[in-house]
Length: 113
Image (tube, rainbow, N blue to C red):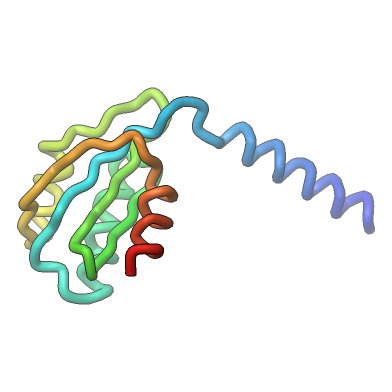
């Protein structure tokens, strides 16, 4: 039983290391007006996660921020991101690019409460 558990844990660690980004993250941060509830955030997250270039999405209702991280070696089309959010019924007021990962942005937002 212990050997199976160790093997599963080792395999998980190898898979996580292989999936980890190797270069700097390319993240697009958008300021979005009109998000008022978790359902709004979930709708935006679902639409942006479905894009083939998307690795991770973070939505912060309080700060009105949506951060979208591209997969390694891919780029995000800011016009497409803006269109997806606008089609969902929200207004994008600002777009900026960052080398920070979505995880880093999420952690920074939590410390700024």
